[in-house]
Amino acid sequence: MSQPGFAVTSKTPLIEGELSHEIIGAAMKVHSVLGPGLLEKVYENALVVELRLRGLAVDQQRRFSVLYESVPVGEYVPDILVEGRIIVDTKTVNVIGDAEKATMIHYVTHSRCPLGLIINFSKPSLEWVRILRPDSRTSQQLLRKRGNPRQSV
View 1 (tube, one colour):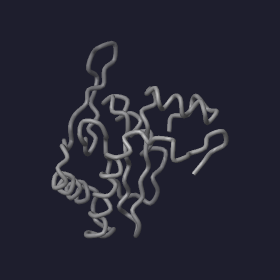
View 2 (tube, helix red, strand yellow):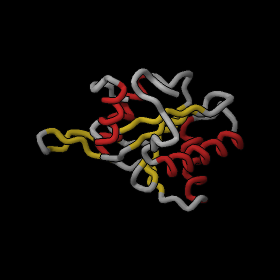
View 3 (spheres, helix red, strand yellow):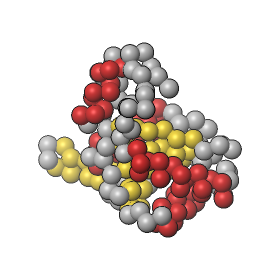
View 4 (cartoon, one colour):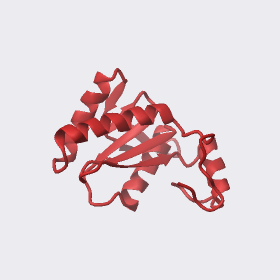
């Protein structure tokens, strides 16, 4: 897949590529066993089990503080944190839309994780979206190559 001004080649490394591949593989297994049509929490719980069976460190429903002027003003609670590096949000929606993407941008920003995965279990085929932390150096380099330095996703 390429966009104007940005070609993806075999030399273009994915941020957290190996770990994200392992997470997506685990999600594919969960989806193939359970199928579509269940509640989000069921897929979240099953994915946690599968990730742990694969030997990965998993935090479920870990809380991240939102600070304003160094004062806690709220919390974000993403579904899953894998190896302290990737936030995973399980969904059962018709379309992974702007609201889900915006939420994940907040998750990766406040957690300081470099990558978030939104995984949608509602369709016959598993769907996912990778969200890079907007302020990460690599993310900014990629966005500049795409010609849109303000783009968040």
